[in-house]
Length: 212
Image (cartoon, rainbow, N blue to C red; front, side, top):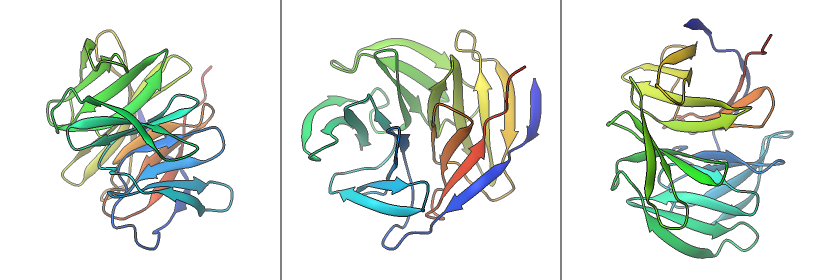
């Protein structure tokens, strides 16, 4: 297992009226983050919030190219990104203990925080298709270039780890500085991993290591 210190490229926030950052996703231009009672769209170039949607936003966030998916307590809401309207909801697999959320290959991937699990679920029905066991609390999930990454947060320690999607074995670990929490995770499809900063009310961009 390869282990190194996380390289923080940029820090965003804190933001007015935002007490904590939960789920994080990326729509190709803007970073969306959940802050309890709103979903906020951040321009990563200038660090400003471009718009906010008034929806319950308690944990993980995902984007499928058209819709936002947002965990609200024990449900996952499907939201029209253009209008902010909630189209439908499904039950979250952790029944309220859910954390990270990601979209990949037609499925939603849901972190179950204290159970240390990641579930692949059907986005229409919520049916669990398979489950991956982790070794630490799961606080964010993302897929990029066939790699499965998830954030962790236990006590004062947080890291971002790449795991084998078949076995859950840790392949690579990026350690955050002590006291720097990861509460949500999403890739920009390139070399940046966007991380929620929990109760610090911040977002951070961490460099994804190059391959080869």
